[in-house]
Length: 240
Image (cartoon, rainbow, N blue to C red; front, side, top):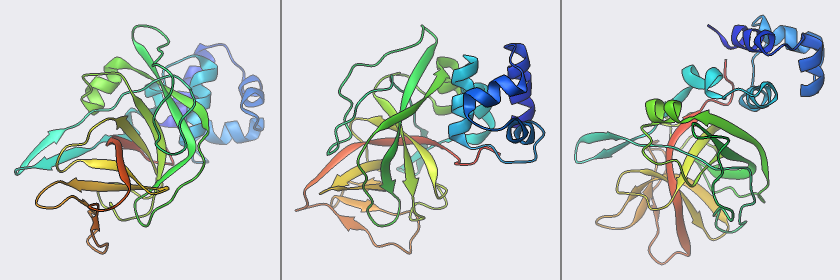
Protein backbone atom coordinates (compact mmCIF):
# COMPACT_ATOMS: atom_id res chain seq x y z
CA UNK A 1 0.00 0.00 0.00
CA UNK A 2 1.41 3.42 -0.92
CA UNK A 3 1.80 6.31 1.52
CA UNK A 4 -1.29 8.18 0.32
CA UNK A 5 -3.55 5.17 0.85
CA UNK A 6 -2.03 4.61 4.27
CA UNK A 7 -2.75 8.23 5.24
CA UNK A 8 -6.35 7.90 4.15
CA UNK A 9 -6.82 4.55 5.90
CA UNK A 10 -5.27 5.78 9.17
CA UNK A 11 -7.28 9.01 9.05
CA UNK A 12 -10.56 7.17 8.55
CA UNK A 13 -9.78 4.59 11.24
CA UNK A 14 -9.09 7.40 13.72
CA UNK A 15 -12.33 9.16 12.82
CA UNK A 16 -10.83 12.26 11.18
CA UNK A 17 -12.37 13.96 8.18
CA UNK A 18 -10.04 15.35 5.52
CA UNK A 19 -10.92 18.86 6.65
CA UNK A 20 -10.17 18.11 10.31
CA UNK A 21 -6.78 16.55 9.62
CA UNK A 22 -5.83 19.27 7.13
CA UNK A 23 -6.66 21.96 9.69
CA UNK A 24 -4.47 20.33 12.34
CA UNK A 25 -1.63 20.00 9.82
CA UNK A 26 -2.00 23.63 8.73
CA UNK A 27 -2.56 22.72 5.08
CA UNK A 28 -5.56 22.95 2.75
CA UNK A 29 -8.01 20.11 2.26
CA UNK A 30 -7.05 20.03 -1.42
CA UNK A 31 -3.39 19.54 -0.50
CA UNK A 32 -4.28 16.62 1.77
CA UNK A 33 -6.42 15.12 -0.98
CA UNK A 34 -3.46 15.34 -3.36
CA UNK A 35 -1.33 13.43 -0.82
CA UNK A 36 -3.96 10.76 -0.27
CA UNK A 37 -4.50 10.17 -3.98
CA UNK A 38 -0.80 10.12 -4.82
CA UNK A 39 -0.80 13.36 -6.80
CA UNK A 40 1.86 15.02 -4.60
CA UNK A 41 4.94 13.73 -2.78
CA UNK A 42 4.72 13.48 1.00
CA UNK A 43 7.76 14.62 2.99
CA UNK A 44 9.08 12.83 6.06
CA UNK A 45 8.27 15.70 8.43
CA UNK A 46 4.64 15.86 7.33
CA UNK A 47 4.31 12.08 7.70
CA UNK A 48 5.66 12.38 11.25
CA UNK A 49 3.15 15.12 12.07
CA UNK A 50 0.31 12.99 10.72
CA UNK A 51 1.42 10.03 12.84
CA UNK A 52 1.56 12.19 15.96
CA UNK A 53 -1.87 13.75 15.32
CA UNK A 54 -3.46 10.36 14.67
CA UNK A 55 -1.58 8.85 17.63
CA UNK A 56 -0.06 5.99 15.66
CA UNK A 57 3.51 4.79 15.30
CA UNK A 58 5.51 6.44 12.51
CA UNK A 59 6.77 3.08 11.25
CA UNK A 60 3.29 2.41 9.83
CA UNK A 61 4.34 4.83 7.08
CA UNK A 62 8.13 4.44 6.98
CA UNK A 63 8.83 0.74 6.51
CA UNK A 64 9.35 0.92 2.76
CA UNK A 65 11.44 4.10 2.89
CA UNK A 66 14.09 3.36 5.49
CA UNK A 67 17.44 1.63 5.25
CA UNK A 68 20.00 0.37 7.76
CA UNK A 69 23.69 1.22 7.50
CA UNK A 70 26.14 -1.67 7.40
CA UNK A 71 29.71 -1.67 8.61
CA UNK A 72 32.44 -3.14 6.43
CA UNK A 73 35.13 -4.73 8.55
CA UNK A 74 37.56 -7.52 7.62
CA UNK A 75 35.52 -8.28 4.50
CA UNK A 76 32.41 -8.96 6.57
CA UNK A 77 29.28 -6.85 6.70
CA UNK A 78 27.64 -6.26 10.04
CA UNK A 79 24.15 -4.77 10.37
CA UNK A 80 24.07 -1.86 12.76
CA UNK A 81 21.28 -0.41 14.87
CA UNK A 82 19.28 2.74 15.62
CA UNK A 83 17.16 3.92 18.59
CA UNK A 84 15.90 7.08 20.31
CA UNK A 85 14.56 9.39 23.02
CA UNK A 86 11.98 12.08 23.78
CA UNK A 87 11.97 15.63 22.40
CA UNK A 88 14.62 17.53 24.38
CA UNK A 89 17.40 20.09 24.25
CA UNK A 90 20.78 19.43 22.66
CA UNK A 91 24.16 20.97 23.38
CA UNK A 92 25.20 23.22 20.50
CA UNK A 93 28.85 22.22 20.60
CA UNK A 94 28.70 18.48 21.05
CA UNK A 95 25.24 17.19 20.06
CA UNK A 96 24.86 15.34 23.35
CA UNK A 97 21.39 14.88 24.81
CA UNK A 98 20.90 16.56 28.17
CA UNK A 99 17.76 14.78 29.43
CA UNK A 100 17.13 11.03 29.93
CA UNK A 101 15.31 8.95 27.35
CA UNK A 102 11.53 8.78 27.55
CA UNK A 103 9.09 6.35 25.95
CA UNK A 104 5.38 6.59 25.15
CA UNK A 105 4.88 3.06 26.48
CA UNK A 106 6.77 -0.20 26.68
CA UNK A 107 6.64 -0.76 22.91
CA UNK A 108 6.90 2.77 21.45
CA UNK A 109 10.00 4.98 21.63
CA UNK A 110 10.25 8.66 20.72
CA UNK A 111 13.18 9.97 18.66
CA UNK A 112 13.98 13.69 18.82
CA UNK A 113 14.50 15.34 15.43
CA UNK A 114 16.96 18.24 15.35
CA UNK A 115 15.99 20.01 12.17
CA UNK A 116 18.66 22.70 12.48
CA UNK A 117 21.53 20.35 13.30
CA UNK A 118 23.02 19.53 9.94
CA UNK A 119 25.90 17.17 9.30
CA UNK A 120 27.63 17.51 5.98
CA UNK A 121 28.50 14.57 3.76
CA UNK A 122 30.66 16.94 1.75
CA UNK A 123 32.40 19.90 3.29
CA UNK A 124 31.58 20.71 6.91
CA UNK A 125 28.25 22.29 7.84
CA UNK A 126 26.97 23.44 11.20
CA UNK A 127 23.81 25.14 12.38
CA UNK A 128 22.48 26.06 15.81
CA UNK A 129 20.32 23.31 17.23
CA UNK A 130 16.64 23.18 18.01
CA UNK A 131 14.61 20.04 18.59
CA UNK A 132 11.43 19.98 16.52
CA UNK A 133 8.83 17.39 15.49
CA UNK A 134 9.78 14.04 17.12
CA UNK A 135 9.54 10.63 15.46
CA UNK A 136 7.78 7.71 17.17
CA UNK A 137 8.61 4.10 16.32
CA UNK A 138 7.74 0.68 17.65
CA UNK A 139 10.53 -1.41 19.09
CA UNK A 140 9.65 -4.22 16.69
CA UNK A 141 10.23 -1.91 13.72
CA UNK A 142 13.57 -0.74 15.10
CA UNK A 143 14.68 -4.31 15.75
CA UNK A 144 13.54 -5.61 12.37
CA UNK A 145 14.78 -2.78 10.15
CA UNK A 146 17.85 -1.52 12.01
CA UNK A 147 18.93 -4.50 14.11
CA UNK A 148 18.55 -2.61 17.38
CA UNK A 149 19.46 -4.28 20.62
CA UNK A 150 19.29 -1.10 22.71
CA UNK A 151 16.75 1.73 22.61
CA UNK A 152 18.72 4.62 24.07
CA UNK A 153 20.61 7.77 23.07
CA UNK A 154 19.40 8.21 19.52
CA UNK A 155 18.31 11.16 17.44
CA UNK A 156 17.58 12.23 13.88
CA UNK A 157 19.48 14.95 12.02
CA UNK A 158 19.72 15.99 8.37
CA UNK A 159 22.68 14.97 6.22
CA UNK A 160 23.78 17.09 3.27
CA UNK A 161 26.19 16.56 0.40
CA UNK A 162 27.23 13.58 -1.71
CA UNK A 163 30.54 12.49 -0.22
CA UNK A 164 28.96 9.33 1.24
CA UNK A 165 27.21 8.39 -1.99
CA UNK A 166 26.08 5.77 -2.88
CA UNK A 167 25.76 4.57 0.74
CA UNK A 168 23.84 7.66 1.86
CA UNK A 169 21.60 9.58 -0.56
CA UNK A 170 21.85 13.36 -0.56
CA UNK A 171 19.61 15.31 1.83
CA UNK A 172 18.44 12.31 3.83
CA UNK A 173 17.44 12.00 7.47
CA UNK A 174 20.18 10.28 9.45
CA UNK A 175 19.48 7.96 12.36
CA UNK A 176 22.29 8.55 14.83
CA UNK A 177 23.17 6.59 17.94
CA UNK A 178 25.38 8.52 20.30
CA UNK A 179 28.51 6.85 21.63
CA UNK A 180 31.66 5.27 20.30
CA UNK A 181 32.07 4.32 16.65
CA UNK A 182 34.02 1.27 15.53
CA UNK A 183 36.45 0.85 12.67
CA UNK A 184 34.62 1.08 9.36
CA UNK A 185 31.40 2.58 10.73
CA UNK A 186 29.87 5.80 9.43
CA UNK A 187 30.01 8.37 12.20
CA UNK A 188 29.07 11.97 12.98
CA UNK A 189 32.20 13.88 13.96
CA UNK A 190 32.60 17.42 15.20
CA UNK A 191 35.74 19.20 13.99
CA UNK A 192 35.94 22.64 15.58
CA UNK A 193 32.39 23.96 15.05
CA UNK A 194 31.42 21.83 12.05
CA UNK A 195 29.83 18.40 11.78
CA UNK A 196 30.87 15.76 9.27
CA UNK A 197 29.36 12.41 8.24
CA UNK A 198 32.19 10.10 7.19
CA UNK A 199 33.43 6.54 7.56
CA UNK A 200 35.87 6.07 10.44
CA UNK A 201 39.37 4.68 9.91
CA UNK A 202 41.36 4.06 13.09
CA UNK A 203 44.45 2.34 11.71
CA UNK A 204 47.14 2.97 10.65
CA UNK A 205 46.11 6.63 11.11
CA UNK A 206 42.92 8.15 12.44
CA UNK A 207 40.99 9.46 9.43
CA UNK A 208 37.50 10.18 8.13
CA UNK A 209 36.89 8.59 4.74
CA UNK A 210 34.29 9.33 2.09
CA UNK A 211 32.58 6.52 0.18
CA UNK A 212 32.57 8.90 -2.79
CA UNK A 213 36.21 8.75 -3.86
CA UNK A 214 36.03 12.25 -5.34
CA UNK A 215 36.56 13.52 -1.77
CA UNK A 216 39.91 13.45 0.03
CA UNK A 217 40.26 11.80 3.46
CA UNK A 218 40.25 14.05 6.53
CA UNK A 219 43.08 13.39 8.99
CA UNK A 220 42.00 13.76 12.60
CA UNK A 221 45.35 13.68 14.36
CA UNK A 222 46.15 17.11 15.73
CA UNK A 223 42.59 18.36 15.16
CA UNK A 224 40.11 19.53 17.79
CA UNK A 225 37.52 16.84 17.17
CA UNK A 226 34.93 14.65 18.88
CA UNK A 227 33.20 11.56 17.53
CA UNK A 228 29.58 12.06 18.57
CA UNK A 229 28.01 8.82 17.41
CA UNK A 230 27.43 6.40 14.57
CA UNK A 231 24.94 6.56 11.73
CA UNK A 232 22.91 3.38 11.79
CA UNK A 233 20.27 4.13 9.18
CA UNK A 234 18.50 6.77 7.17
CA UNK A 235 15.18 7.87 5.71
CA UNK A 236 14.82 9.43 2.30
CA UNK A 237 13.82 13.08 2.57
CA UNK A 238 10.81 12.54 0.34
CA UNK A 239 8.88 9.49 1.40
CA UNK A 240 7.25 8.76 -1.97
